[in-house]
Length: 221
Image (tube, rainbow, N blue to C red; front, side, top):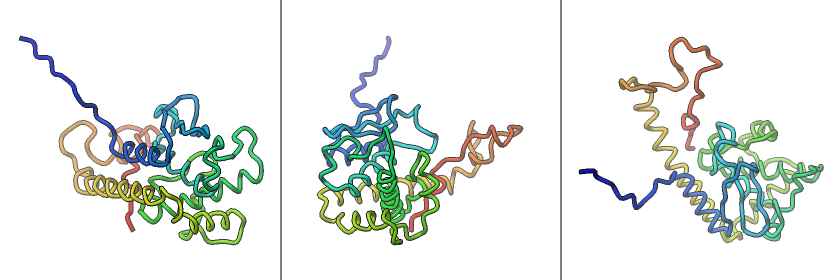
């Protein structure tokens, strides 16, 4: 007799679910697409690159977070404009200021929850993000002032508490995973692929070794 199991549920990545739910609370429906990196249409749709189009250290959570940091910097009126009013087709000096302000806000928010590296920025602006100090809002430059104003006004944003909740939930998951890596992941347990990822298979050149997991960099302050 052949048993046919009825499938009534499907598995969803928990961190992706957190950030998709947050986007919904903001009024944005997340769609995955191989045709974009990250984009909003000003009509309630946020398109995020499909997993196969993103870099190995990118994830949906990080991309949604970055877009919402743009929303904090640009203000509520920007929600009705594609890409929060930034012009992706021809970047000018003001757009670069706005991007840098967004990165400062992203660094500030993630740092509060120990997620600054785990949910770091991507693209060519990663260098700027990495070079920000431990106080990413500090400074008198225009991008710093815009980031400061964004955080000062954040408490008046209806979904800001939801953003903090999503960051906290992500940090708690990261803490659990990191603890497993620390206690179990560094031990050989007799199965293929076990042990420290950064060690790499015997005989494999360093450049060919698999990348270590981002979970290893989690540090809750």
